[in-house]
Length: 450
Image (cartoon, rainbow, N blue to C red; front, side, top):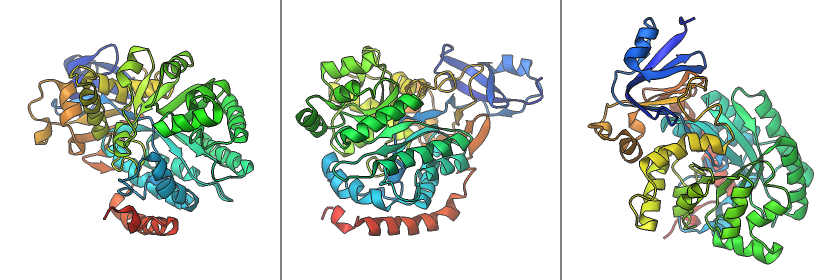
């Protein structure tokens, strides 16, 4: 049957798979799956009646995978720039977490998820960090991702130190999110933990039991020097070391940041096949340090990219994150070849899929995989004169160049517009909720440097 096949065409098809780059290529979509990838002329001959999207210019790539973020912060971007992480916990996220409601989680996800989609993101790994209460909050994230049509890997970032929280409420929040994901079109549940140092022994034990039951885990590890110091002083080893000896790494693990690593930490990441979500923009804003991405990749550790939260990165633009990832390593190592545009595109696509344990489903343009694609057309000065499509995509492309985004073969972005949500109509309500959240949390002008 070829009646339901559609072709997407581009001058440069960057597959992130065995085919590499296909010049003057196309992808054939049949329903929710990729049916074929190859030269446009060959696919046109194979599917002569198929409708064609794309004018033969531009770049076609797999949908981008953001491996780490926090929709908790979606309504409070643009604050707290003068804080390092430990101060930021006290002045931003600490006051914020008890004040986020399910409606705020939903609206924030719609707002910032749309921003991600407009930059080519099709899969979002999110960790919602809130204080649990009588009503579950985290299912709002799943509802928002479903309305946008995005793929989700969702978790609840539990913590109970120094702010004690009833373990029953923490577990109930996990269970509510898991149930919401089970009902979802495209989201799946992952057990989460904010950090090891902000978790009591009781919470770590309960989390390890949940991880054993669900098989997937999302956690911040070794993000800043203070975390490493605190963990060594209180538990005699780093967060990574303690996570390993408590069984938390005995699963498919997604570890955010991993900036401050010693040889033992790297060995544990490799031994437990832990994947790292690298968040270059937030690491720079919070002055956290530079993740040793080249070393991790050399030693066989999977590394994906994350936009992180909307209050620690501020922008939720994956293209910005991709460019920053390359530039940060180049200037840090003073080596132009240390991380290339091809490396970064792999991290944003197949690397991200591997980090989530989803490489059989997404991350590259290959027959049989889900039809998650992003098409960049040569309609602005940014993408004129494409010589090397990898460099052009990573260093030059912007959101205005994103012509179409598909998830499971269905469009979620077309001509610069998110299809699942009326963003202009959403904005007034989002502004009201943002004011309420900032007011309730006490996030006022004291956070703005004078």
